[in-house]
Length: 382
Image (cartoon, rainbow, N blue to C red; front, side, top):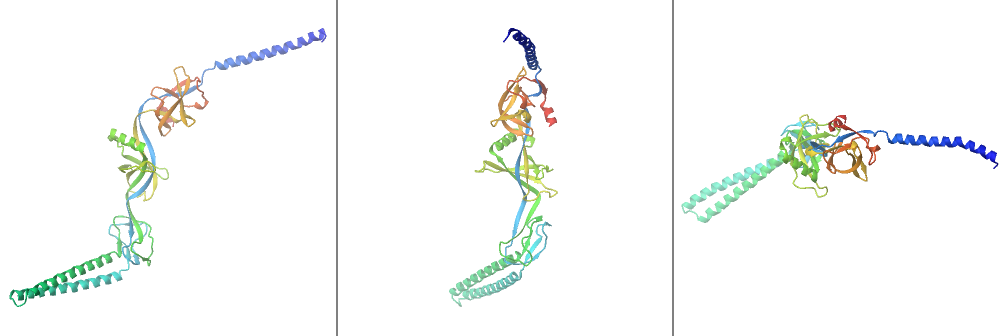
């Protein structure tokens, strides 16, 4: 290239080089400014041990305290139905009547047989008295007395047999009227008037729902926790439970745990509890469903807000903040979950500080400006 042309080209490159260097200097300044920005401010809570009421819910099967199937005891045609389905009844009230003509006839026949047997026994007794008198006068032999005594014994046995038959006939006649075994409500009537029924045919059932039982199953670990809490502080009424209805509303009366079964179920490893609930307004029905809410008091529990927890490979982590504001991932094992909190089993201890919100934007080793908050304020916010 000729010297004059090369000199001109160099003069053209000088402005471009200066512009490039100026741009690089601006980028470096921006990076420096970015690195000197203040760390982001995030809420931080200090963990503290506290007594906590831990509530768990269990699927419950609601049953009336008394629910009895009414079945026919005799064969015949259903002649009358005295009550309607869903009607309240009193103990001893007549509900159904089976045609009783056959049973009345049988009772009349057995009573006649009883009367005849009684008369025969009376004749045998008079004959024995006559033979005894003749024997005492040595008019007849003593053998005749033994024969008369045997005849009286046989006649009396016949009387007992006839009396038993008459009693049985009267009992069978009483079975033709089916009565309420206790105060309650009649459920669905399965047969109509005129139906031919056999011994054992199901007619209906009667439920006493003035109080109900709620049966629910508890795991072995939760059962041990419940028993431990009950022994430690019986004054807190740990046997009280609440019932959540199928629509999610809370049933007003409080229930009481009455019994616990004596063995765990082999298939599930759970044990059955039974709680009793008053039912003054008859809201709860036999066969209803719901959830029993059981509360246990956990002493010295560490609560971690759910928002502070994130998962990695099925493990739970939080960000623990040190004195310099640097955060580090920490794995912990939750004991259970309570509303929007986790109860810590291991991995964290009282006095440590953890980030409550914004954990999705953090990385291990990041620095933040801690903004202290209390657990009570988080509870109020929720």
